[in-house]
Length: 209
Ligand code: VGL
Ligand code: ZN
Image 1 (cartoon, rainbow, N blue to C red):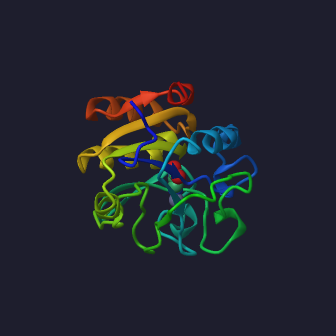
Image 2 (cartoon, rainbow, N blue to C red; image 1 turned 180 degrees about the vertical axis):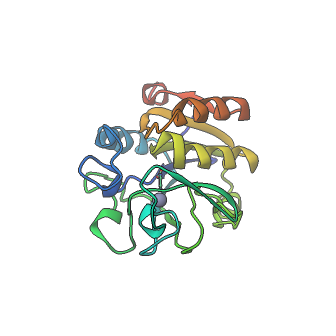
Image 3 (cartoon, rainbow, N blue to C red; image 1 turned 90 degrees about the horizontal axis):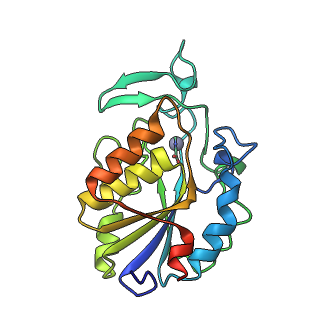
């Protein structure tokens, strides 16, 4: 595979302060991916970023559900929702992209999760099915191959990868450019779901060969 041609895009998912050590929904070792992402991004003609971008009192926050604690679940109109600590609130420092990211060449930042009553782990569609427009954007630009990096492997990376496959993109997760939350077996489930959907896995070093 040659990731560098115009038909490929690197999709960098949610590398934001709240998901880094010290953040409100910190992913263990999340900061370790920053130099890896910076390095692999130099190999790509197309780079797209996402930013989790919630309203205050968003429906995905445990604090919006009296009596619920973070990492418990609730049933919403679109199905089961894991409830999170408040994170990535629009305009806050926690929602900012990690300061160490060096991606001035990025072409698009997709913000997601901005509808107060719907979560959006995926870069492609909200939990209730509403499109973000990303698939149409990529297709319009002649991009057919998506390489994923970012946080977290078992939520936003996995859901984005599954939707990319669903939309018929060739889809590759760059394993060491991701880290997982791994709540309640979520990482093993995500890896199994991605494998059965035909999502490939590579190491960052494989891209530089
Ligand atoms: C994410 C949980 C809640 C993620 C975002 O980026 O994986 N996880 N919001
Ligand atoms: Zn979120």
